[in-house]
Image (cartoon, rainbow, N blue to C red; front, side, top):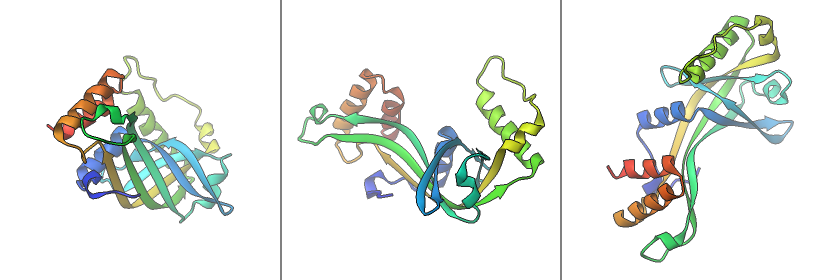
Length: 194
């Protein structure tokens, strides 16, 4: 990913926290010589060295993933930024947060390991509900998925949040985004300046 210096995030803990908070990723690899992407929730291991998830067995991507170098993209809030929001001349642009993870994949077929991944994904995603769903399903359904373990080799992180503009212009852009209902992006911009 092209990352100009002022948009680069180098703090490893910040990168890992971003992945945890925006865990729905796009897994990109090659299938039969073509670029192929699947969108899926992923878990970051406790030590921050692996991504875990699963694909439907009917998805052709898994059959060619073993030991392949893949790219997983995690997208945070994003929005168009109008040059009319600047006091100084500018151009139309887009503010966003993104993390790219590169790593090699191991496919998992062990039903106990698959169960652990599914139950952890469920636990995390149900945790904010008043009455979380209890994982009571027919374990034979696990035969319809293939587990994934991606060994993280590199994490790139870019927060393009108007850091190349003056403080007042960043505040003005954040205020405009807030007025448009882009609350998460506005908050991310304000967090940079706090």
